[in-house]
Length: 250
Image 1 (cartoon, rainbow, N blue to C red):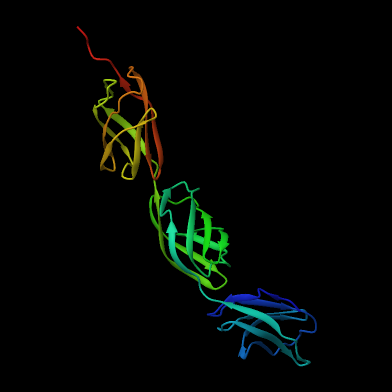
Image 2 (cartoon, rainbow, N blue to C red):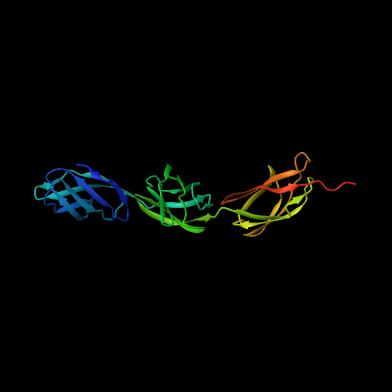
């Protein structure tokens, strides 16, 4: 006589179905010494709602014909989450997040706001999950659902991908040192700016403006250079956005 599921929250409320034979007219379902609420009954099954409890308890079914052999039901405590990493990513989703805590081995879902994702359980203390796409930029609550219940209290921030609108000035000497203002959008979380493959020192002025100093070209030669801005929300690319030009000679 199987029981499905065979585990649930210590707070009770788990819908449990027991299947077998001669189950018509069930008068009681017991989880240990506690009675469960019966919600459905057929000759081959009985469905009930588990009461609160802890540990492992025997489950029995009583009909006018007697009481069944016991089945084991395992009470699982609610999960506890201690950390989430990383705490931000692109609005399009797709990043892998690691959640650490306890009681995570039975995790079935991780919710990012109203959107859920299926996690990969690493251990009782850790799981990983691929972040679903967000509705827009901004923070959302993160909750983990296990057989023991749902726990929340963590936050993940969706970040829009950056854009580059203009570079001013857009040319300078191959020796570098030109102060350039980059305008665009979603630049607050800028992590790097490169001219070609060479990183450039920068400062974030605001979400739409960066102040950058051009690095020298690797070979000292003039020519166009691609400009790349990388943020926690993604990468913006300006093909040939800056041109290195030689100064006049006399």
